[in-house]
Image 1 (tube, one colour):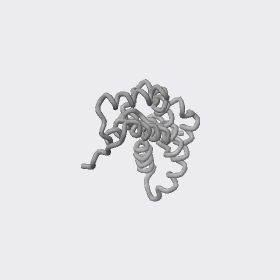
Image 2 (spheres, one colour; image 1 turned 90 degrees about the vertical axis):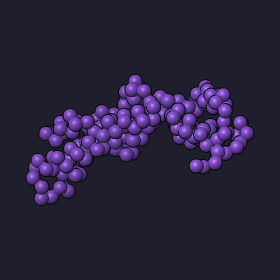
Image 3 (spheres, one colour; image 1 turned 180 degrees about the vertical axis):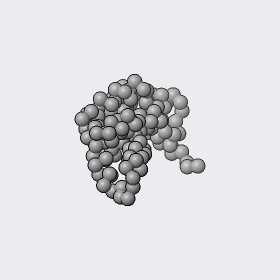
Image 4 (cartoon, one colour; image 1 turned 60 degrees about the horizontal axis):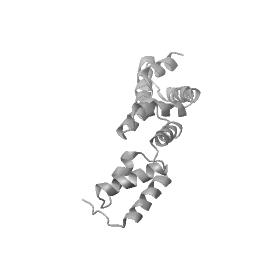
Amino acid sequence: MQEKKLFPFQEIKQKLVNYCVYQDRCHAEVEQKMKEFVLIPEAKEEILLYLIKENYLNEERFAKSFTRGKFYIKKWGKNKIKQQLRLKGISDKLIAKSFSEIDEHDYQDTIRDFIEKLLPTYKGLKEYQKKQKLIKFLSSKGFEYDEILKHLDS
């Protein structure tokens, strides 16, 4: 087990501000980071309240930027994004709101692009086998079964 670091309260507070400024964070990530330091519960509470009050820690902003990043950079589907946000303790209401960051047209194009790129690589397979492989791949990327079928049939 790693040693907890001893720092003055203000220094810990500043380190956590920097942690939040570097990249949007959720409460769970900040609380995990706090475990690295020796802090009494009151101090943890005070730092959390400060981060929220000063808008360093904003769950909605985090959910939206997480959703944008995972879709536009990693090409994840909504199911996978939702699952990861839930693991980070984000409410279903905020998750639903964060999906407004994904343009529906871009979402459909991404599914179509995957199909167009992958289909030619499945050589020597029967049609149903190609479909199975595509469904399996796209599902693992987090795309919804209905959406995948809609594009496979067209």
